[in-house]
Image 1 (tube, rainbow, N blue to C red):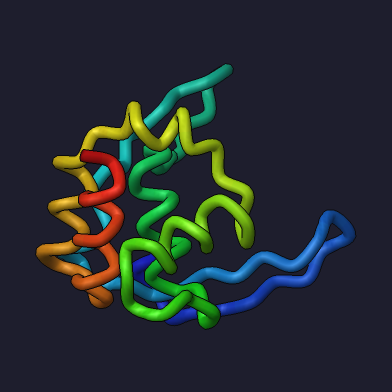
Image 2 (image 1 turned 45 degrees about the vertical axis):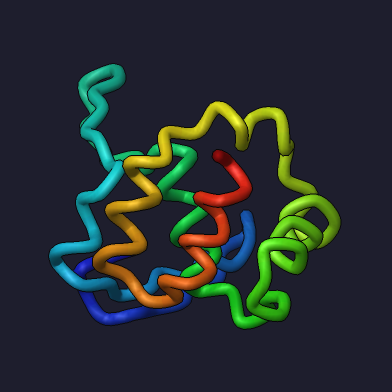
Length: 111
């Protein structure tokens, strides 16, 4: 995610897509890290999943069951880890971002 225009970079390591998001949405669940004199921003697991859902072109039918199948089978998400997620971050993403229904279905799965 970026505050700048969307762009794709092809490198020897792979293809990296950066998607422009609203200024309000960008900082949710993001923290600054300093490591060996280098500073960078990193998303929490909750925010990373919300970002993936926000920009994934293939999403299941709008249902809790369809989303659960997407998480388990399509992206092979660790459902035990999902149950440890901080739903407040997902609620913030749902309040500002698109795909509110799917985000709310994600909250239902966690609760």
